[in-house]
Image 1 (cartoon, one colour):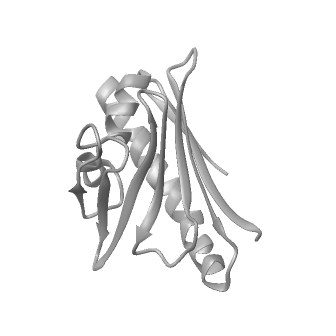
Image 2 (cartoon, helix red, strand yellow):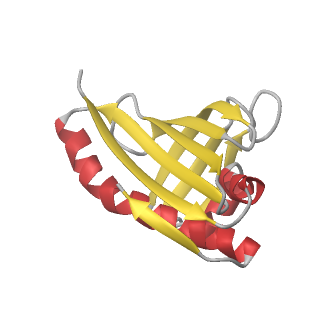
Length: 152
């Protein structure tokens, strides 16, 4: 089946560790992103934020629930949606890459192409750049430097 895709990229002057600290902890998402509340429903295998962890994110009256699939500390985070977004086979990957200017962040997701999946894509095309802008701004506040955001 054909896949739908959405992504956003941003660059912060913050270190990869600063960016990672915001990405790797669901408890911080409501502080920097468009969510009203966020947290953990179940811990991961080795730690609260580890592989297998189930995290939740609420915007208004809608809550999405995600499960962590893979983590490479300070570099890569992969998760799937298990509830709250009406898509099949959703897989998102967040990568953190050091650059000469600080840190490049790429947040990308794919899911099965369905009628509802197309509607979700329209919403996520605006959501992802907003989310990235909030993440970059929060990382910059931690680092007190400037940054750029490039939605794709």
